[in-house]
Length: 506
Image (tube, rainbow, N blue to C red; front, side):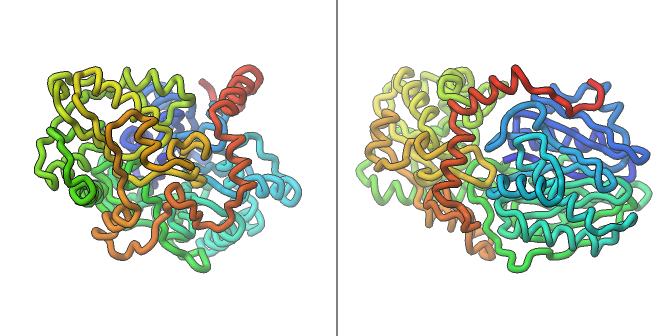
């Protein structure tokens, strides 16, 4: 889960890219990067940290040009080294940079193939660098100084044939323009926008969420279709073509549960409306299965659960209260490495309003339960604030399987629901009662808004991976990359030995 943006403008795009990344910051807080094209050369700044910390005035002044791409990173299978901050660069053909949201499930094989067949060296462990080199190699095979749109689309078509997994991509080619494309299963989102400048010229933008378009004054044109490629020349001409043989729409359902901002529209679905539907359906399930439930108040765990909790309260005819105050300057605990750091962070980011808990039987609502660390800590905080009973509701079903498509839901043995029944999970997190959303209800909550979405990527709940190439061997490989212990060792090694050859200037 990263955030990507690309703009072909008529005026300098540095500030617009910065603003878009700031709005997309929730999609990745580990690193940020921007590349622009100025007078036939790339201008780049990328580093670890939040957008506001990575880009200073001197960096923004250097990022000249009317075309550029940006990225905010959330590390998954790769490392969190600054050397893996995006966008990535290759000098041939023409000079290319690329930013990617998602994860390739066959990156290991592709890396070997690029070395043996294409004679291309991949300098990092990032699958995004692999993807860039696959695309660069296919464009290189065109053997032309001036690429036509059909050459671009032919290259993307060959990329689709080789790579598997989830990917939404923006790429710049010097002397040509901006390329954007989405995987044939439509797992990761990509949205096209446009605006007209004061001179009547059209500017185009690609982004992970519609809210990024809204923030800088672009109107949404449409979602990029699964398998589709968009090519926008440096002069602002737009071309598009379907480049996959049998594309299918399988958007990641977690975009609606947790990842996307509520003011975004993804694949014609209002994220806010989807969450209201989740709350209504979960409220109906609670009314059915807990008909004797004695609850005084419904309290969300801010902020992604607020909309769900409000609708649950409405459905159950119960008071809704804000019982926790969030410190907005603490990062999302979901994406913090290591259990110890996550446990410490929960108490730093949330503080209980004791008057809303004292002597009350409360129903806490969260978007999901992954490791159970946050849930356990919050339940304990509620009890310390004086709650008589603490019940817990999850807007998503039990997460039992790892995610392989660009979300760092950890290995199976780190998932609290893996191999356990609801009663066991309830006991482990210390709740008086626990209820999960049904998968059918979760899917229908989104489908009610856009009936065209017949299928979703829901592998974390049911273990069905839509790319059909995920076996136990791959999951074991992922386990070696993603486990907290292995990440800690790798990050220490990188911190002591890695040469960071990735930045122009400082």
